[in-house]
Length: 295
Image (cartoon, rainbow, N blue to C red):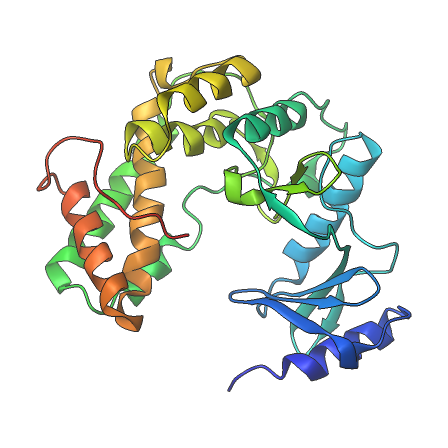
């Protein structure tokens, strides 16, 4: 049964006692999360069911970042999240018209994030899980032959073990978890901001750096000069770390499984999923591979 988003939104706005007219809500994005904009500068985010704890933590992290001066999306001063029919609903300031950030913006913001002192009591932050939902994505990859799904499960198991054996690195910090240019906004007339804080957690900061590094090393989507600027701004080149290949392989698997999970929705998604799998299996030669960006 599809979600009645207008009813969920209206119920949540009333419950939070926010002075906004839900009838004037405009959809921004309907995906795993549904995002709506209201005319008074309010963004309403409706999470998929079962995400109340994650939404509560995201709001708390956003407020903590605000207290420490890290430029990021800001939650409204309301009691949130509001739970409606199993959906956690949160309320955020609208950043207005903006463009996508640059690799240098990503480096600047995650440097500020990684430099934060960790709170004395930090259990509420949670821990980075680079393998979250990957088993489910393999199960959902119905267009792939069984032998390919079996290969993916074996590959995933090998990477899980390799992650446990990663060499020492920069030391545990607060990490963004999905640090790429699509999660940085440049509002008109304002500084770049971090978006999508739902995966912020304690973890290895190299994970945030690998996302940009593979845009160069794995796919040649990023000019070498842009990556050099990224390294200069952040102050560390993760490709020189002995654990880089393991984190790279995990990121590549996540990206391949996104298309495999949705391969049944279109021929384009299916063809890209097959290409990405063949690359992971070593059938398409060395990197950089000719993957097409998802967005």
